[in-house]
Amino acid sequence: MKVLIIKTSSLGDVIHTLPALTDAGKAIPGIRFDWVVEQAFAEVPTWHPLVDRVIPVSLRRWRKRPWKAIRTGEWKNFRKQLRTEKYDLVLDAQGLIKSAFLAYFARGIRAGLDRYSAWEPLATCVYQRKYAVNPDQHAVRRIRQLFAAALGYAVSTTTADYGIDLNKLINHTHQENDIIFLHGTTWRTKHWPESYWRQLAEIATKNGYRVKLPWGNITEHERAQRIAEGLINVQVLPKLNLTDIAKILASAKASVAVDTGLGHLAAALRVPTISLYGPTDPLLTGTVGDKQIHLAAQFPCAPCLRTVCNYTGPREVEPACFGTLPPKMVWEKLNSALKI
Image (cartoon, rainbow, N blue to C red; front, side, top):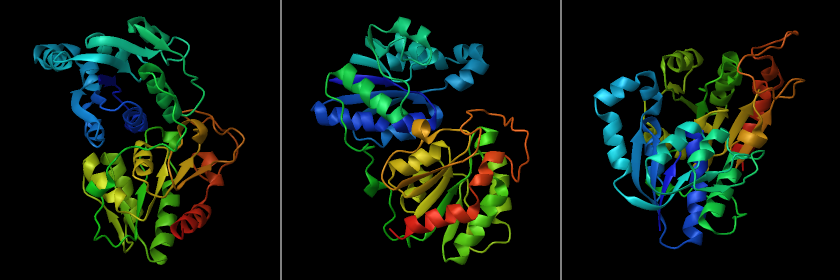
């Protein structure tokens, strides 16, 4: 059986899909997958052994300049790749208008969430088979249920298995005393205060650990430099692709993360991780896997799910809710995890 997956973005959402492939592989011998994904995340599906072909798409860029995509032939080339093979099933695992639009051009029976389950109900007009999945649960669970319904097997209740071969990523000569700070995220409100990162770096290095700081853009690079300034054993990493970041994470002793795609990557790689949640709810978006510790802000308006903090009361830090997750508390949890 050959299935085409439509799951283009974001990084966390792409990673959340991997356990469903593992479930399907155990339930249906011989099943294989192709995967349509944003160019920026095209490395991730290649890590799963059941994925044969990755079809990159650049919707984020094309939406800004649609006519350029047509003139340069990028859209035509993408459609050609999409239609190279006829699939037993084309499964839109995203439930958005943009993903349904892509599914429409593929060859095969189109399936996805029903109108009560999809994030954008209009997307369901494209599907020939529709499945109900409760949206008020974690994304990993939702996707595992969708795959089981669409492919006709019982939903697995085992711990999520992302299917990544860690032996291809882990550096076995590593000294294993690195802690990775995953400080970059999208919303302003999801950022743990920079001063807290600095304090945590000071505590970690005083206790004999090395801290490494990856980054993905200029703003994150500048923040990483400020966190590391003047501290021995705190390293700002060079610009890395996802595979290189995965290798560093897989060989690390632990990581500390905000609500970010790289935090989900750490979970997929079974790295002990302390994840920090202010405006978001770990029950819906938290990392899933072994040795994952969630620290959620204990604040009157948390989780608010807002991209802009509208709290008007007194505050020690910005965003205010993260004042309930100071560096000392995070270190205590991290130190406990390091000793396991």
